[in-house]
Amino acid sequence: MKLFDEVHEAVAFKNRTRRIAELLSELLPEGAKILDVGCGDGLIDKLLLSSRPDLDVVGVDTLIRPEAHIDVTKFNGITLPFEDGEFEWVQCIDVLHHTKNPQNLFMELVRVASKGVIVKDHSSNSSVDAQILKLMDWAGNAKHGVALPYNFLSGDAWDELFDRAGLRVEKKLVKLKLYPPFVDVFFGRKLHFIAKLVKYQ
Image (cartoon, rainbow, N blue to C red; front, side, top):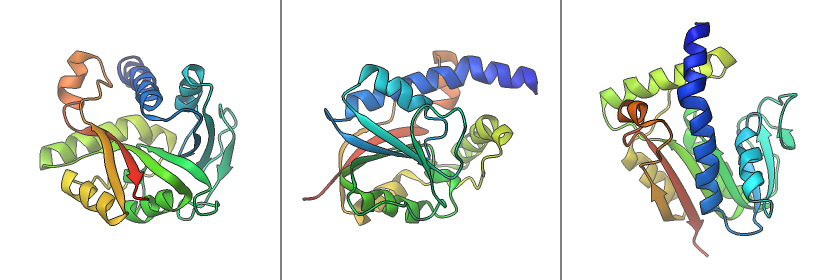
């Protein structure tokens, strides 16, 4: 198990973390006030702020980690402890599929955002996709005690959710290059997406 963790850290975690920070840097507007829902230890935000010091980022999570790199507020996993539209942008990175009801938490993201939401998650469009995503989720999170309900939505289900929330897809990327090429062939493909979703004004 230790060897597996070391390999996962070397070939997946570091590259993924760096790449997601790069993608967020490209998508977020200048000077934005951002809430990161399910921020974990805030490492992605630390990397993001190193290239985008103009941003104001705070985090919220169900668990406050002592080594967190940003300010983090605790919440119950259901209702965000913020006012409507308190943040310009809300980002949520690989969190929604860990919840019992991804749709309900997504609506909370929309509620506290005045301009829009950036979501990074997975699309499961076949039984093969589902099995690969379960393996990836287990490999990256089981050792941390993270809940693993494996609530992966299909691409169509995501589109329906965005539409129901009153969001317009300004930009959506599916080839994210999160892993080295020899890994991406199996675990990248179109299993991941990041979308910049804008509220209709």
